[in-house]
Length: 461
Image (tube, rainbow, N blue to C red; front, side, top):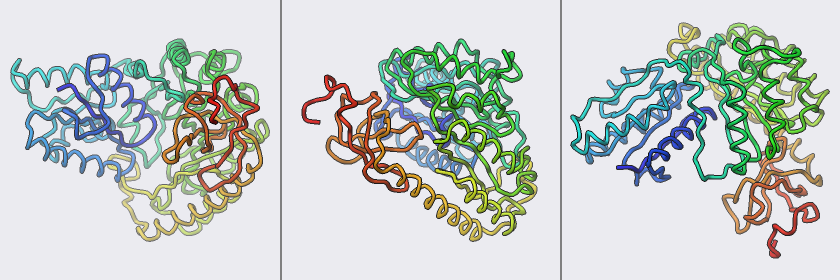
């Protein structure tokens, strides 16, 4: 009864939460398995940001419930944002759940599983579904564990929980609670432990990551707590690259802009959500900035960092979005030149400010607008990638590629994926790779041996 499979839906913060739960379970003696068919326990870490993610998780939980009917000792749990959002009402649709855990209670999962398994083994009465959804002070400090003994070339580090923004379409403030930051010293200690275990790149995670600590920790010499944190991590020996996601334009001040080009480990890449190119729609979304302000921030960053790579989020079909509004978004795409983007078709989320507006933009129009933006994105991304052909770039080798013998994959500082022929012994190294070909999403490269420590590379490479 100790084999656990964790399936994660949604964002990088959910991935980090799942990883922390896995680490806590392993420390308790549980085995984390990749194949859910081999598991005695399946935990679903869920997302409520988009309706499709919720429906997928509910469908999967229903399927697992049918498996439970065939094997009463099989345990099923739902964690995370959907659990927090729907609460015990979720049991009306999923009566076979054994465990329901909210976003501030991930650290309680090992104890709950211990109790459930003990009851199955006759050491106590079998309880009804365990429901643990209450807020807990200090919960932001519980997402700190990483799987012991496993080297992570690139690792996520959660620096805060929650969000104080009031975006009309977003349910995160309800599911994650208000902003709460971890102490800088604790975060740096976690990064130092990762570096000692072989991690070379960290991505700092927060719902509004550049708002980290602004209401809890002091500014020093005009620098925000987030910039202070970046400086501390930049000094950690062994860490070669720093990324963060996702910032908000309203919290992007000059001290953060100045970090680009000043902190050598801060990568020339930013995920910067625009959401719409129409000021009218941004105001309706309760996004407190204009397209002009968004553009000015990026212009200032590109002055500091001319080789900056930028990704974004955009929602099409928000209630009231006209063809003119959408054209403004298209114009912004062309003018700003995003290298990557996540384009979402609006869906109504319960208990958001936009819920009373309904969903008046027809689905076929959303589909059309979605495809138009994707086409523009692909055209720009291909041009930018092709501009790299012939250049030699620094690549952090992450591991084997999905296909091909002796094929490996890594990322540039601009977060471009590179595939090349190499060796297992290169994993975790920064190596020079000459770019030979480019597609919309991937660069094909050739290892430049003159820039590699040959003592670490087999003669066959």
